[in-house]
Image 1: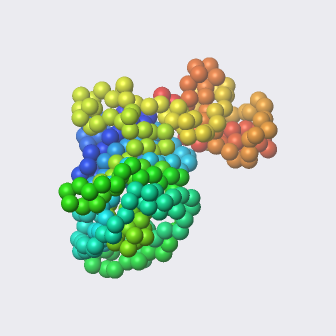
Image 2 (image 1 turned 30 degrees about the vertical axis):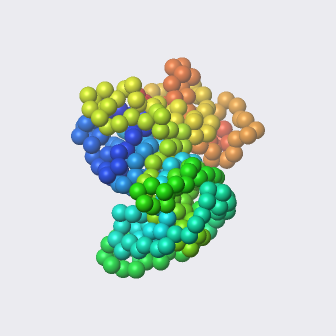
Image 3 (image 1 turned 120 degrees about the vertical axis):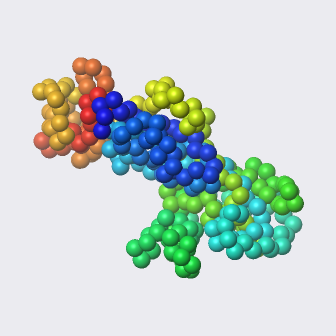
Length: 306
C-alpha cells in the first residue's frame, strides 16, 4: 500500500443503480492502490449512506459493533414478487382492500421490537455453500428459516394513491438481521393483498448520517481530505473507550505490549480500547487489555503509525 494512501472513513452517498462493489471500484480508480472496504452492503437499487473504510481503517471494521440503521422506504400495495420489490420477476397483482392511515400505523406498531422474520430468498445468506440469491438466479426455490430481526421504530409517513397505486412511505430504524423488503412483505400479508418495495433510501448507518454524506462526483478532483473522518474518532463515536499511553521505543509494532499505569474498575478482561499517544495526543491504534499483567497489547495501528 502506498504511504500516501489515505486512512480513515468516508460517508458516501450511493446513487441508485450502482452496486456497493462498483462504489469501491470507483474509489480505487480515484485514489490508487490501497485497501478499501465498506460497512454493510447496500442493494444496487437502493441509495443513501454507504460508509467506506480506507487504508489502515479497514483493519478496524471487525471491532465496530453492529450499527443501528435508518431507512426511508416506499411500498406499493397489491404487488408480490420473488425479489419482494417492483423490479423483480414473477410479479403478481392482487386486489387491495380499503385501508386508512390509522390501520397502517396500527399494523406497523406490531413489528417494533425483536421479532422472528423470514429473510428474502434473494438475500446473501448461505444455503448449501452458496448465497441464497445465487440459487434463486439458477431457478432454485429457496425458503429460508425465520431469524431474529430487531426494529426500533416503524413509522408510516403517508398513505396515498399515486400513479394509480396505493403507496406508503415508512421511516424505519432497525438493528441486526433486518430486511426492509421482508418487513414490507409482512405488512402486505397482514392486509391480505401483498406489498412490494418500490424505493429504499438509507438515511443512517451507525454514526454516519445522510446529511453528512458526499457523492462520488464531489470527490472527482481527488481531494478527499475535507471529507475524510478520523479512524480513532469513529471508533470513539461507536462507544469504544480511549486509553492514553506513553509510547517508547519507536517504531511501534503490532503485538507490542505497553504497561498500564492504573486499572479502572469498569474495565473487563480482554477489553478492546482505542489507544492515544500521550506525547502527541493522536489516536494511533487499537489495543486489548490484559488486566492480570497490567498491560495493553497493540492489535491494530492506523494513521501515520501504521
